[in-house]
Image (cartoon, rainbow, N blue to C red; front, side, top):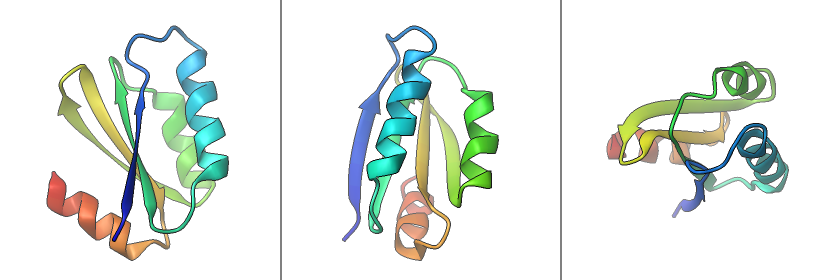
Length: 85
């Protein structure tokens, strides 16, 4: 079973959301994924994710956007996220 890690950054001011998610990415394990609750889309983050072996999916959420992040090689997390949205 995949483990969801929720990062609620929707009230934080820049650059704190980026710092928080980058810290969490260093700690992320296979079988875990991040659901980041953000009031805006962090466009600079998307290239960083792709360049470092992650995938992401963005949906409309309660506070603006829900951004799901997982390891590109983690097929189970990717499939779970696609089934959730």
